[in-house]
Length: 201
Image (tube, rainbow, N blue to C red; front, side, top):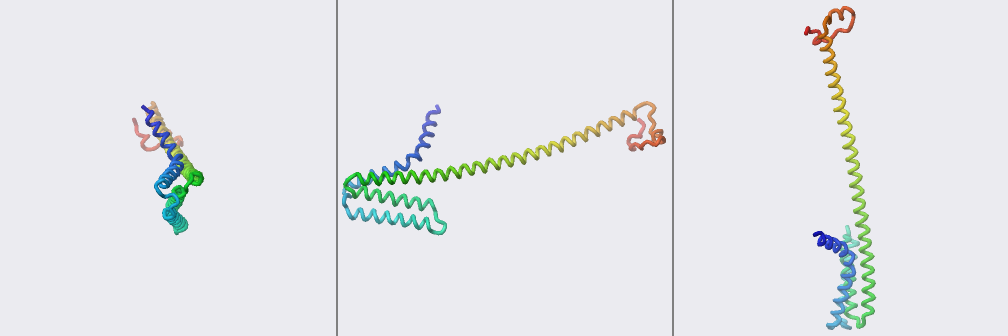
């Protein structure tokens, strides 16, 4: 029952790692198909691809250098420029050695850039996770301190209440003893009891 979920999970993990090779291989295959359909040694097709590649590279440079440059747009434009250049060479060249060489270079470059982005994303994720753990520990510490304070207050109130109950019980017990005379105690110079405790019971 769990096998389809595991298969999708493994596929989801492998797809980003295979994406650069799949992309460059797709461009190479499409370039060779274009070569077989009349692009070989076609100056017009090569010029078109060169102009498109230069335009994409220029757009990437403007996106990277401009005010508040966007890395995603710049990276996409440069990747498009490289793909157009690879497709142009694969379509124009008559042999397979130069397109394969460019394909290998493009694949290595794509893997290097994706590894750099993965490292950056991993650093960001780890920093966020560490920050979250620190915030949780800080909140947990504050909660523990407040719980200890509240417990101390409750315990103090409970002890005071117990002391008051015991004192009241002692006073009542003493007042109920036979021969207890508050006036005699007062005449003997002992401290005067509260008015509530001098009532005859």
